[in-house]
Length: 66
Image (tube, rainbow, N blue to C red; front, side):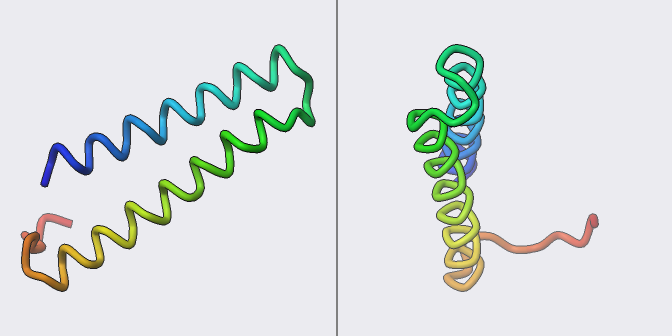
């Protein structure tokens, strides 16, 4: 479970970094930057949905630390 979440976070960070790179090299309105940001948003929504599903299935449980 932790590996899947870590993989999502790494992909989100990679997508954010690539969007920054494209913004610096291609210009502020580049299509590649917009695509990278759209993938980041999609991955964030997918991670949230996966976490909700995992909680519903009982794969993860809150531990009361927060």
